[in-house]
Length: 114
Image 1 (cartoon, rainbow, N blue to C red):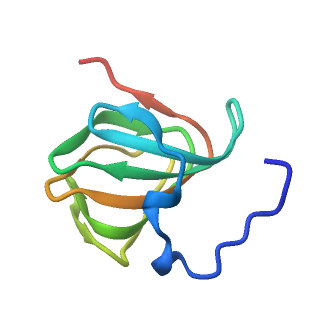
Image 2: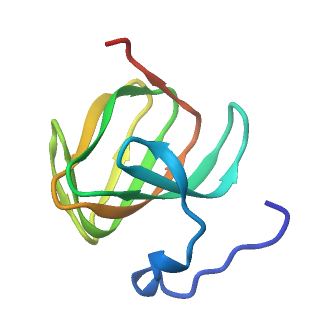
């Protein structure tokens, strides 16, 4: 990212206007910035029923649910929720109804075998 990014109101974000790329089965990504081994931020769009396999956080992860809902072993998160996962934590993520989230990673995640 070489220019400043400004979004005046995340609640008014139109996901249809973003350039989505495949991420995981049923999930698309729009990267805001990406640094090999360092901080990254992206919007993720989950189709209904999409899941992310169990993964461990090597740094902080911040998730802001913009629309729909997602869940993990610790809870169910609706639009407007902010979840901060600390380094060393691990979880599976799913979205029964589909959702759009803003995710900020301090460091990359590590997917667990299985």
